[in-house]
Amino acid sequence: MQQIAKHFFDRVRDAKVQDYPFEHLVIDNLLPDSFYKNLAAQIASEDFHNNYQRGAYGNIERYAVDLTDYGAFRGSSSPVSATKLHPFNYNRLLERNQIYIDAFVKMLLDNHGDFYSLLSSRLPTERAQDNYFFHINMTKDSVGYEIGAHCDDEQNIFTILFYTPETEENKEFGLHVCKERVDFMPNRMVIFAPSKPNTRRPATWHEVKRLSSNLVGTRNSFQMFFCKKV
Image (cartoon, rainbow, N blue to C red; front, side, top):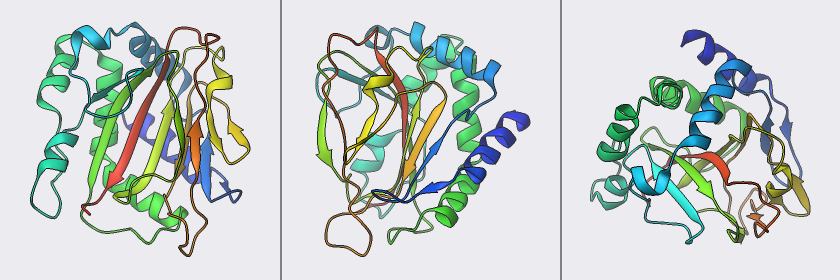
């Protein structure tokens, strides 16, 4: 686990900040190759619909499985709710012996403070605060999924997208930032600090174009967010 964490942090630390059209990181080979292949295979083999509760967001073609309890965070009346595992989904993950997914999530949760500090040192944001909720979900998108250009919610301090396909077959279905496309490639992470229009930093407009019938299987990823209460 320590070797995986070291590899992860080295890759994030060494990635070049890309300035256009807004500051963001594109990190390739995020995890050691052998670990990543097992992780991606477990995601691909999972039947989300029949084994996990669906997150209450996204359109019908997106099945998001919360691994931390985002619903409790959003429903809390306190300024911030400490990050907690989703009781049903995480227990199902353990019951199904998904050891690589579990190891990845545990690595993130054990090191979320260091991860947050590293991102804060690399990407400027006016939203940073000591108290935050670290949201992790695993997601499968099917043909027809799309999300129009948006900048992300005001509560998002950092948006973190980790692409987990087994092959490059679906590379055309990546994230569009303005007119540029970040290809949907295996073992690739994309990170930015959301910013709205008419603020000090460029607005973080991004979108996913409609997934056409060229999609092979599903578009598999982890979606992660450091969130604050608004």
